[in-house]
Length: 392
Image (cartoon, rainbow, N blue to C red):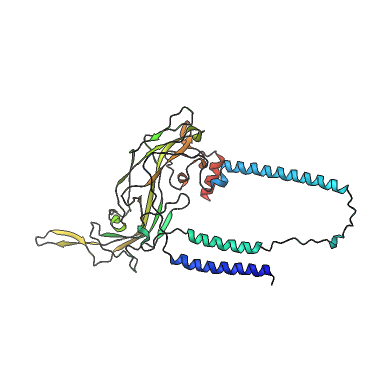
């Protein structure tokens, strides 16, 4: 075994030992808890999209990205053409300048290519390092009570953040929800899973147009302004769902409001150009799913013959599985959370959206766009690619 092979073997062995130690260390640690997002309520926050959207799809599929790739491809082809011409010129000159050296037969010339002995070793070490980095980057929530996390994750793109294993009220072996609560419907809810996502946009009313002209004034949403939305929550079981708040620890109300704690200012006209825009609020939402068990009622007769309905706990309940309800997410201070963004639209027709990669990435999440207010421009090539990607 050569000295190089011994060194490579030593490096791989050392890396494997290091990995085994790190694995034991990582899995012995408690799951990391994401830090709460602190929003400074002082000063003015400038909103806007200085470039194309930060959505990962746009980095390769927007009109700008495609145009840049086409430009780079043409430049590459031009460089290769120039290199070929230069090589042909050098070969032409060399053919007319005899060297006086004997020419070796073709079968005696070497065709063996040089192989870098470090290539495979480097590949193995890189793979191990990437694996270790992924283990350290894992982001999860406390396993003791996963559905009661005070600061859940709301993805900026992709599917909702799903959390299973809710254990505040475990299900009975027969699939029913065993907890008994004397509410008027004799019903109780056992939560099984939650999903966290951004809900439908709430356009700032009155709608404020943002124009891309040099003399257009900067549009602002001043501190203390509020948006209020009525909430319709119904299981379709003919029961009051307020009792779910008791089971989940979520505050249920028939309406919600968001009051901004600072002044928000629209971007300058040159950033918006050639599009107009408006402010919209995107609320953070939580979808709770589980099973509802409803016990029958019985009537107790009093000494004077008066009857009173009570829950008949001795009977078997009716259980309805996979029941879900959506509501705005509230933080520990019972405040609705969300984000205020700018939506770009065509000037002169605020119902037609600018192409997808001109929008905030949160606006591209499923279910955020209020299609009763705005629609995509179906003749736009970038929009067509985006919708095809969404439907694939």
